[in-house]
Image (cartoon, rainbow, N blue to C red; front, side, top):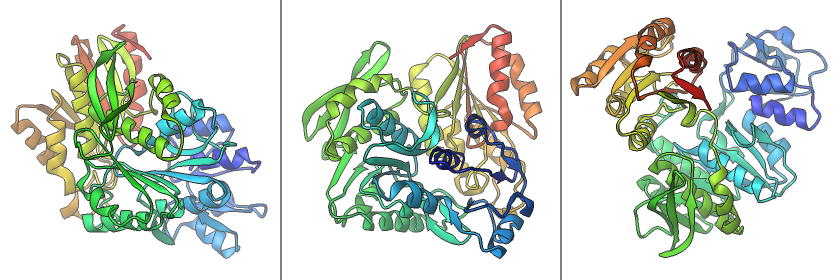
Length: 460
């Protein structure tokens, strides 16, 4: 929503807005830079007679007092996805990045590369692109890149958001079960992605990851050309082959139908990110663009904010990540262990999303967190909206992690977690990785200060 506010302000609108609680970084920084001070809480008095358009977020429910007032006054109302398409996408060539994981990294990389190639794309992403310093841009070029997720739009439109973006070019990274608050089964998730494929025009293109078995089934009857990519499957159209390190970065051959199409290096950690890069490069080629220039700019890309973002280096390395699904947790910790095999890794985990606060992935989450040497879990604050039998059992989660010999502790407050962790910052070769889809109560900034005061590391 903060990115949408920026886009509207960029085309000359005067924007105000509110949320049910205080806005946290990076959204708060985006809004501050725009000169927009978000209001806390919902109140009909936030509306006035000069309001031309109300954008209703998907946290808003039917009984929201501000939305009730907007309806009563006959104000035009749109949800975010509809507003984004109507005002910014519909007259451009829509490029959508979808999938359960990797959307922000892939859409950020695609936006960065097309920008550096001089194409000036518009983009709208769920994270700040570190090289460009923003999560949105109007753009003068023909393409508009959007991170398209399968979550619903609003209380009055339960369709997945990505159906509103009408893609011409589509990148599909993977499909797994997620968003247990709106999807009852993996079959429901598959149906949403199938509908997305069915929306594709015959002159469009789809690039999908063949390492995700469900995607092969989903794209089978696509009406447009389809290309696949993979890390290991030789029957995929595009592959990446690890060939060693170059200037401290992993280097890969980019293979297209069995032939070397180029070579790339990337600052992004982990095999999953090499796969993300491969998918983006395949999409660029399928869009009719030349990948040689894209390959030359790739080593510059620093990633998106809070996606395996290294905040400090030194005796203590602090990494901030958005991981909340067990697959993401596993990928993050595996990448860190591969890069720093002799370091001690503390995984700090906050179950923040509607799915992670449920028991649906409890065993899988425990299995992923076991990759760390020590695990600290912040207990979720409010689970009152979740039936007791469906809530995550933090005590049981910790017991499972400990059963395999991994140290694990849970805390009912952020203060208690900090009190436990700070004395352990003096241990040499320590890595702390924060994993939360929320603000983690500002823990990243707190630890950054503690590390600096103890001269244990320097900020990036």
